[in-house]
Every structure is written in C-alpha cells, then in structure tokens.
Length: 473
Image (cartoon, rainbow, N blue to C red):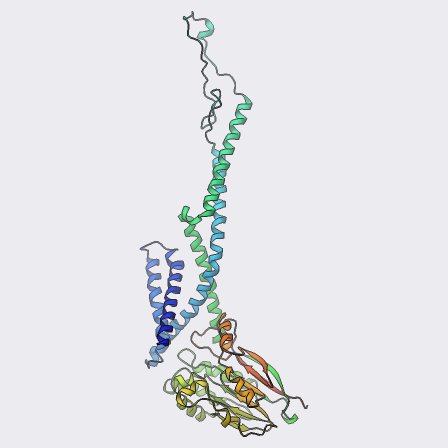
C-alpha cells in the first residue's frame, strides 16, 4: 500500500513538472495550431513514456535490444527534464525584470515620438488657442450692436492677423511637453505592473528569450555531463595512514572502483576503458566494490569480459552491490569468478600486511544473503590491520564495532547529478571522500559509471588509488 502511494505521488509530481515544462517551452512560445506546438505537445507525451519504458523494461524482462532502444532517449530525457526545469525556475526570476526593462524602453520611445509630433492644448481664456499643428487661429472681437456706418477705405483693405506673441507660444509648448510626459509616465507604470497583459507581443518576446536561454543552459549541462561519463573515469590518489599497518606494507596501493554499471547504455567499450585505466596505475590490488552491472549475465556477460584483463600483484576482489541483486547476484558472482576476480561473500583473506574482508550488500537480505560481519571479521587477529570492502557506506557503524581500520565503499555516485548530492547526504553518512568514524576510516568512491542517465554533473567519475601508509615507518 505504501509503495502504491509513493508511486502515485511520484507520477503526479512528474506529470506536474512535464506540464510546467510544456507550458514554458511550447504553450508560451508557439501559436495555437502551429506545427511547432503540435510537435512540442507530442514530445511532451512521448518522452515521459520512453523514460518509463527505460526504467521498467529490464525489470519486466523485455528483450535486451528493446532495453537498448529505450535506454538512450528515455534516460537522457530524465536528465534533460531536471536541468531544463532548474533553468526555467531561474528564468522565473528574470522574466519580470526583462518585462519591466522592455516596458520602460517602449514607453520612453513613445514619449519621444509624441514630443516630436506635438499635441493639442486648451485655449487660454478666450484669447489664444493652439491647434494640433501649432498655428494661431484668427481671433474675433465683440463690439456693441449699433447702426451701420459707411465703409471706409481702411475697412475695404485686406485684414491681417496681429503677430503671434512669444509668451503665448512658449506657454503652449510647455503644455504640450507636460501632457507628453504625463502620458509616458502613465504608460510606464501600467506596463511595469502588467507587462505581459498589456502587450502580448512583448510577453511573447520575453517567453521566447527566457525559454531559449533555459533550453541552451539545460541542454548544454546535459551534454557536458554525458561527455564526463563517456570519456571514462579519471584517476584520483589518496594516502590513508593505518596505525596497525606494518612497515613492510607501507605504500601498498589498492585501486578502488565501484558502480561501473555495465548495462544497456554502458557496454563492453566502457568496461575496456575502466580496465585500461586501472592497469595504467599498476596497483598491488584491485577492489571492485559493487554495482558492477544492470542486467543479466545472458545479456551482459560478454560486456563484462574485459575484466579478465585486470592486472595487479595480489589479484582482483569483488563484493556485491544492490544492483547485483536486481540482476541475479548468484549468476554474477559465478561469472566474475570465471573472469578471474575473487568474490568475498562475507569472507576474508590474509595478505602480507593486513586482512582484507568483504561483506554482501544489504539488498541481499531479501534473499537471505545479507552482510554477515561475524563471518567476515569475527575470529580474526585484532592486532592486524583490517580493510573492509562494503558497497554501501551505511554499514560503517558495524565496521566500527568490529574493529575495522578502513572501509572502502561506493553506492552514492557522489550524487551523480547536482543537486542530487544533497539528497544523497540524507541517506548516507559520507557521500564522497575520506572521513573518520571512531577508530575507523571510511572512503567512499564516486564510482566509474552512471546509473540511469549516462550523465554526471558536479560528481565526476573516478577510480581511486588508495595508498596505505604505516605509522610505524
């Protein structure tokens, strides 16, 4: 019941976000009935369906070719939806400011035009009246009625208007300027209060500018994040001092790789890049700490085969992650063993300078194969340093209780898509990097691949070479 309610809430949220994105990118920027609006509306329905198909096709056992067809557009759209929405939310703050700037610019232009053409003003107390073109009308003088007098030569001469008085012309000009300024101020205030309502053309222009900028920013971010994944992980190096590590083991190098996520998008070429990168560091030991795959051995076994090429002095070790239990953990454990990796299923091996232990992922509890710290660490010599491979950082408290010196984990992807790191912090004690918990140090890798969208923003993929340092050296 709880799962159904959560699913309904998530679907309602996605529907609302898609509606908002459609309105800003399509509804506000295209004409009703236009080709662009029809295309945008169709995309608003098709893209979320592709995303739903990408997320569910593997779980329902769809043919692998169909999973591959759905994965690229479906998962990429989820990343695009995130960053387009964030860009639009930033645009909501810019939209009214841009509207006000345009409104004031248009009002100022209208004021200049009005001042240049002139306007009418009221007549001054029956003596002077300014017409629309600024000319002075003829004035009439009222005289008392009386008997007609004989016409004189002066009466028969053409009448001429007296010259205009400079003071009257100046007064008329001042009246015109005052009226133009008042109109400009009124228009500016009205436009600033409701720029989109009063001027549909201005509202359309603002919507297209903001929408175009949001689209460019969002898509560029996704493109950058996709390049980060497809170009392969970078190598990081850290030094971790261990109090119990003997001098003979000083400088021991462990190549830590997690969350490779071989699947419908990241296949054999992705695995080969990771193997080549690890081998280039010449490690003493390779630790693969879970979430190797997203799919069955039947579909992805050949994509994992480059792992057989891993090279190190003391071998390559593997522990399960939660995604292995979505994909057939027992089959994958057997397959990686065939490829030359050593699975540590709640087990431990003694190396020259320390104990290396591994526990199953928490997700294995549903199959009765969860982590067992007693089996992995219960009867060991506590005077020796212990390094634990555990996929999820949340088991750090069990590691502290069992005297582990260093735990190596993954799972978080470092958040993978900013601001996902803030959500990851809510569920994990450490999202990325090295931190101290009591006498135990915890290192969390950001991972070498990506789950879902093949996109990383603010959390670059990495393979970390952890160099152990003896405090006795």
